[in-house]
Image (cartoon, rainbow, N blue to C red; front, top):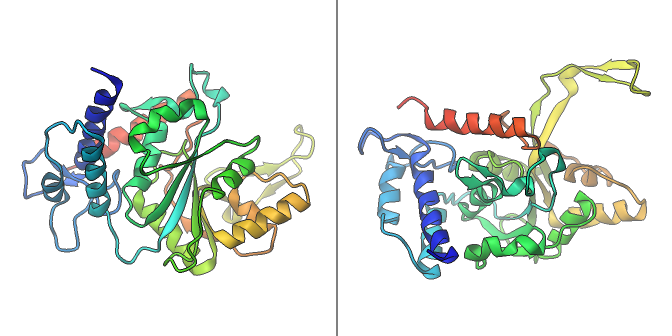
Length: 318
């Protein structure tokens, strides 16, 4: 079997897996579960009460799709299944240019498999399932782009930069702003190493950015955080009630991004996330409540945690 044929069958299995990784649907066999209105990882039913598995069975047959055209038709059907007419439109940049040295693997961490699917593919699938995404940009080294040939009609590619902010800037260059779009030129930046974010979370942070200009997913800090100047002695303890662990996606209006990057470049600043770019020009950043399951996979231990999260999703009570 050649590589393209393997991609055909793998893509089909992945799509089928999305339909079975959610909640119990009473209108089908007891062991068939429905794909979520909110997320390929989530669970739920349509507003009309139609089971997602029913809609899935209508949209996808179990026969193998052997042509690119058929694969793209299947992907378009999946996007329609997760459509939300009221969701603001936006573009997305998925950052997959890191080397992942802390993972100590034989390849960059984003290409490691998590329950049979690469980490980066899981992250891409979230946005590919959303009809409201105008442009999807994957920031990845050219040496790895042939892995995504089956998605070439749905992706733009950008080169990684020296720093994260450079990669984001390169991704922005691939997005043509449509000022008439419902999202007003919103851009979501997501780390490929966070493959467990849900469509619901993405939509909520996009809606907050649409209302406020910029928004980030975050969760209240669980840990007690202490500050130290020399790394040896405690300077002070920071009130935990004021601390948030920030995740991705982080969503910013296109024009705000450009103004922020101009400020960063003028002052030769190094920033570690997209919200920091917005902070440099004094614009507000809304915090959207996320989930603790939206972990960033960095170490081998993180892989084990992510696998446990996926297993728990699949074993939810029927």
